[in-house]
Image (tube, rainbow, N blue to C red; front, side, top):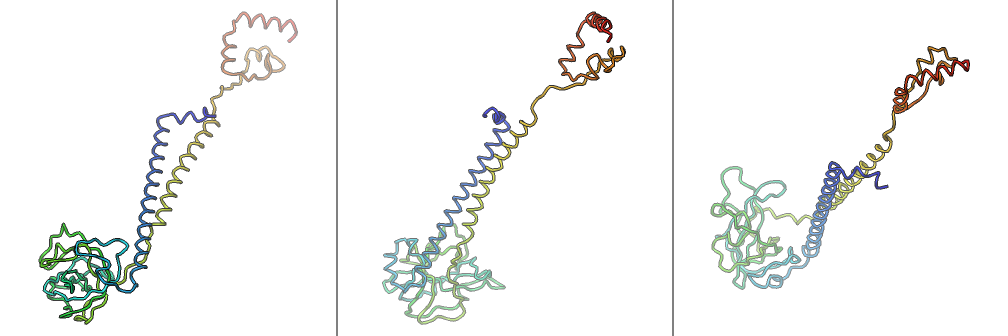
Length: 305
C-alpha cells in the first residue's frame, strides 16, 4: 500500500506538502487572531451596554485618586463631577471625525471641588474652511460652579505629539499646559452641563455597538486552511491513480514470416497469417542460425506442406 505513494519521497513533492502545511498553519493562526479580536470586541460591547445608560456615580467611586488607572470594565461609566471649568487652558484635539467630517474635540480642564483637575471633552467643532483653528474661537463653557455629567474614558498616549500651542493630537494631560493636579489616566466625555455653556458644540454620538466582521473573518480563514489541505490530498490521490493507470508494459509487435509466404504456405505463413510476439521474441527469432531454418524447410517440404 505504501509503495503506491513512494513518489511522495521526491524532493518536489516534499516541497509541495511543506508549503501546503505552512499555508494551512498560517490560516489557523489568522483565524485565532480574528477570534481573539472578536472576543475583545464582545467584551467592549458588554462594558458599554452595562455602563453607558446606568445612573451616574461620583468620580471618586471609580477612580480613587489622580494617579489611579481606569480599569477596562469601568470604561464608559457615567459620572457626575462638580467644580468649575478653566477656559483659559482650553486645547483642541485635532483629527477627530464625526459623521465623516473632520474637526476638533474641545478639551477643557475642570477643577473639582476637591481641588484636582480632570480633562473634559465638551464636544466637537468642524475644521474651519479657511485659516487655522484656535481655542479662542470655540463656544465657551459655563462660568462659575457647574456640574458635568458624562462618561469616563481612558487618556491617550501623547508622547509623540508635536503640535502648535493650543492644539494636541492625543488627549493626554502631559500635553495640556498649566495643569497642577490632573487625573492622569482618565478624562470625562461630557453629556450634559448644568448650567449650560455657549451653544455651538456638537455632542458626540454614543459608542458603536457594531461587533464588526471578526467572526466571519474567523470562519473564512478556517475555510481557507481546510481548502488547502483538501487540495493537497486530492492532488496526491490523483497523482497515485495516474501512475497506476500507466504502468510500464512490454511492446507488442506483429511479425510476418516472409519466407513462409515465398513457399506458398496455405495459411500465408509457416506459423499462421501473423504472429504476435514481443520484442524479445522477435530478437530471438532473428538470431536463429540459417542452417536450422533450411533444415526445417526441408522437413516441411517432405511432409507436403
